[in-house]
Length: 402
Image 1 (cartoon, one colour):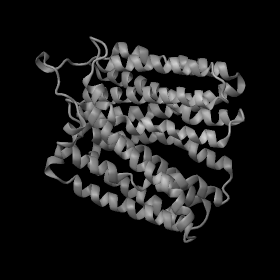
Image 2 (image 1 turned 90 degrees about the vertical axis):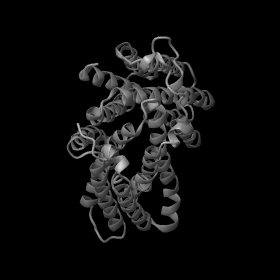
Image 3 (image 1 turned 135 degrees about the vertical axis):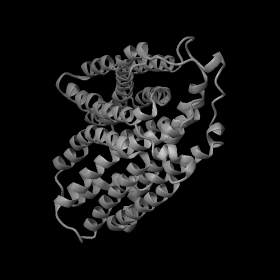
Image 4 (image 1 turned 30 degrees about the vertical axis):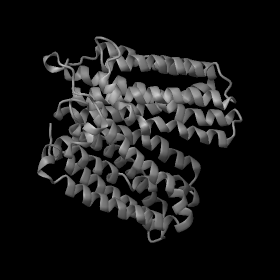
């Protein structure tokens, strides 16, 4: 398959996932609140994240089962995307005050999107040669950034100016994109016509290099949730205007997503995965240190605070591209979707754990102690990652270049 053809397919597939995802997580909460839905009910929407965390449990089934005779992962994408579009249309027929109906449809959409993500990641892992993994993951990051724009920002604007029905039509039409991409997908049959080995979580855990990358996935981002979850609250408590906070979290995030993904791909091709992870981890630690020093009033003023916040957002997008390239390199060709999903879920779980405890720690210890702890954890993660990526059995992962 031609490189550009593959890149177009991946862009369409990752965009397709992100559009309905950000409709739910970005556009729906303010719409529900405008309709008078309680904050408690809106808070229950966090439960819709569960399939994204638990999808590793059914990832082996996606690797193992072929839903359509002549299409493996393309078949999964086709079936799940038809279901996603049906679910979006169904949202247009419910009363938004019926939170039970909304949560039911939302959970179905989340399961379908998560299942499609397994198939897409498995396809990308298997189809991308080592030299193109940075570009492939940069495309994923860029597609997600556009998904935020289409599914979140544009959906809210259409709802505001035209109404609920028009917004549903907009998202449904935009979600048709992957149905075109599935027709372009090409997958190699198993060698010799033999069925592939049975995919399983134990097959992943039996591989020493896979376990090593799993440790990195659990360690590398352990500090980030502590900062990100409290960043907005800290800015508010430091009397930063809400419109400035909105720009930092919204507009800057879109810019960082596009620029960060492209910059990460360039650095990965020039330096290799291991060196880029160490570089980004070091820069992240400096950003966290600035937050801590600002909280302790050692550093004052808005300029260093805004700079640290914006730069840390850029680094976070770059980290995801680098980590996903590492995960692809560690994934077995026999069960690429399962292996990649286990690693992606691991780094997401540790990030969410940090986010979950950040508020309690800030209340008990204060912002300064919280940010200082995040700085220490980030520095430790860099040192540990450096040590783990020095092993001879991981040399191909550490120094793989285009």
